[in-house]
Length: 328
Image 1 (cartoon, rainbow, N blue to C red):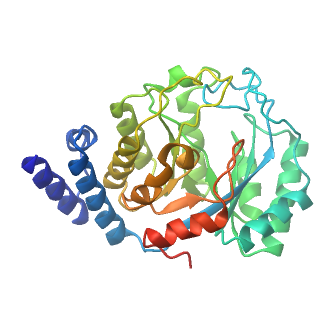
Image 2: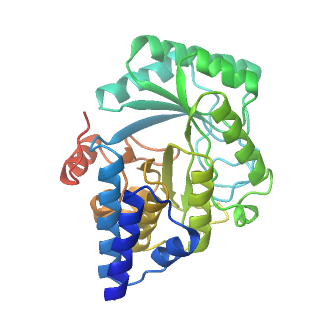
């Protein structure tokens, strides 16, 4: 065990000096099992976070602006039309409703607001409605604008930039190797290509994934290294909150310590990124959320998710304060 503590500190010091961690060393960290070692790893990851990032936490709020009826077959998703989940379905909300939600998010303390739509892509009419909603939010709030709008053409990327959108979310979801077990209606390479084009279009990249879908530790690391290669600046870590009716509804939960270790490993691999605890944090971490924030994370989503609710905002701000972050 003593050798493990020494190696954790050795690797931490190397990352602090600017040396990128390699595969074998990351795999060593991912395979740590003892609780004391995981806690030491979390502490080391937090030192890396403090060195490369500020104590200000990134707070993002989102709206599920178009729900359900998605033709894709993502095994984790309650909104796929191929699964019988009973999730609420509705067409794209009007711009005023979306802008009102953004205003409420700003009053609740969010820094960023993300319009999320189900489906692989929007129709032309839907896309125009989204552009108008972004313009309205840009005019009526001081929020940074994000979008998660499926696959985008170069022209649509340009239009979004002109509307004031600075960051687009396009998650890789899992490793290249495990992806075919989760999605069969499109390829992993399609997602990578979209992220690369977003980057070339001048967007800040928000791309992460979901853990706890039956993937291996190696798959989680492969995802993190892929995100490093793509220079993802914001990395949401979702933890599967298995929805009844999806192919993953009976997937066993990861333990809180396994999740915390994963967060810490992502920080070692992506020292300068915003690592954001996203969907499933309440359901999977519970009282361990504070420790996960102290394991290298520096962002959370507040105000709920796509088809599941989140913690009350006041509870999240109490969590942020206990973890030693500032929201301003």
